[in-house]
Image 1: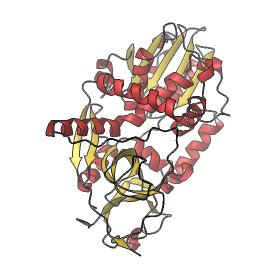
Image 2 (image 1 turned 180 degrees about the horizontal axis):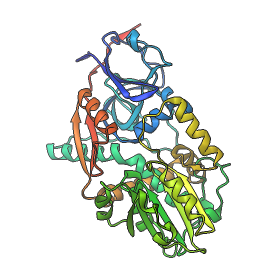
Image 3 (image 1 turned 90 degrees about the vertical axis):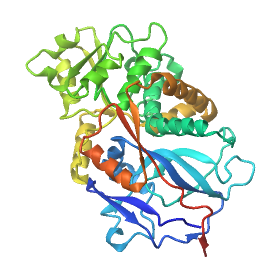
Image 4 (image 1 turned 45 degrees about the vertical axis):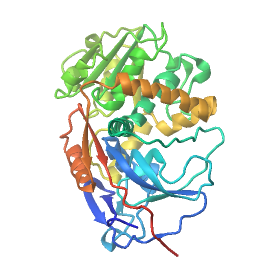
Length: 418
């Protein structure tokens, strides 16, 4: 029986700052769950600037379609041309299952993934492959163990998929083993073994250096490469406010401001010569700084590569976003795509091997690599989610904060209607 009315976040597709927390009194009772499906309630989720990227590019990359508006949405938000839902990474709990018994996904199982922002359950049609480790173990935990699990799941929600992007970039995009080389986005992107090489001649510049994906990638460059395959320098570039935080991680050889190229020969500033290989990676620079620096560095080096990972935090309309995307494609700027990389890697290693190896590396990073000053900032309930979303787009979240939220499981058990 439902304990309370479910609430979901709804956004304007033209401006992700236009946010609404919408109660759904007509969502209950729930319909019957389809065969081979799970019904999942989101219980822990994180918010990062990546959520804004999902919203900004949702009309181009299909992210608005992952979790559509429910049929019970009030009429004022029912036009899918104007409104939609964006998801977040986090944990949920299975409240109903039509999966055959014995496959490890019984009611009560906790799952990690890309889940809807709200307390309305989501129904997922699933296929559990034989080569995927789908085993789950339920245990009785002490209060201390529950607190540790909550903290662990908070870091998973906030950081795991960002670390995965960094991990795949380091190991597979900049592969030291040619047999493991993947392209940053898709197999026909033109990425070569020569592009992938990193060595004593290589200088990497990571823009938005205090961001979580950039920090994870800098960590992998420093600690996750074999001898002789490390770069000469890793330089962080960012705003003045988070500069001390980025420097304090010890992951960068130096940290510069976005405007360090003003009235300076930036090639001399970063130590580039004609034989240097320069790799500029944009994790979300402001004001087109990464593109500007890359163009200037071409005067100093014969090899300058520009990769895009994240985007600037700016609430562009769909029209402006489409225009910017078209300009980047025309300029042949290569964009990193996590799901595209993962599909290629799985094709090389197989699901089981990849996820076992990746999750092992993630566990090490979670325990030892996450910057010590980065703290989880917990909220509870959809009101706190709304406030956190607002703080995030207003730029009020420091680099040492990670926003995570607990949501109540409001169905135990769910009701049904025919």
